[in-house]
Length: 245
Image 1: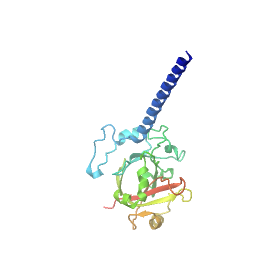
Image 2: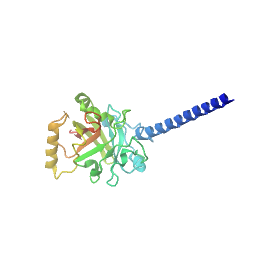
Image 3: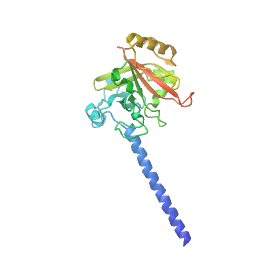
Image 4: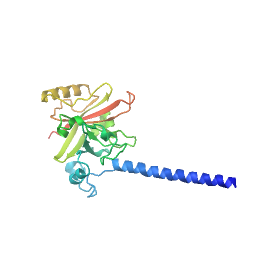
């Protein structure tokens, strides 16, 4: 009798554990799905593509701004998995999107976001600095960590930023690996001359430079973790400027 009872308890425990694992698995999938499996044009099924936009799907701004008015751009990098909305972080809670998705729900994947210090001018800021996680599954901004390799950077030197006002085609000019504890961000410049001086200094010291004479009225920067020499404080920042025709 006791053996039967023990066997029943063991079966019940196993079933409960399996059920719990199934629920956890579904929850993890939903978390991933909400953060990563986002389509620029979900209503049309992502079919509105053109060669002019490097094969990137046109963003349905009416839909996405109704979902979250914080969205300021959509970033796509051909040849990588980077294809995500970018939201504007606020001064009231500048790291909110580190652990919230584009639907504003809690999510460890977060959502790519434009630094709160860029809120006044948005994507047109002198240095428009965007952040996102480097996930183990290769999602979010993970691919940007690869730009510390010159070959990879050269093969993926085009970035498309779609905004409600129009598209911005970018060329990567440099990538730099920094210690976030020792080097601090700079977003404000007194004038164009000060920005030019900063950019010249950056191009003189960056780990990878694709255009050593680059000039720009606005530099776009994409930052993610690299997990290397500085015990978790390593960041790779990819710098780009608007495509020169």
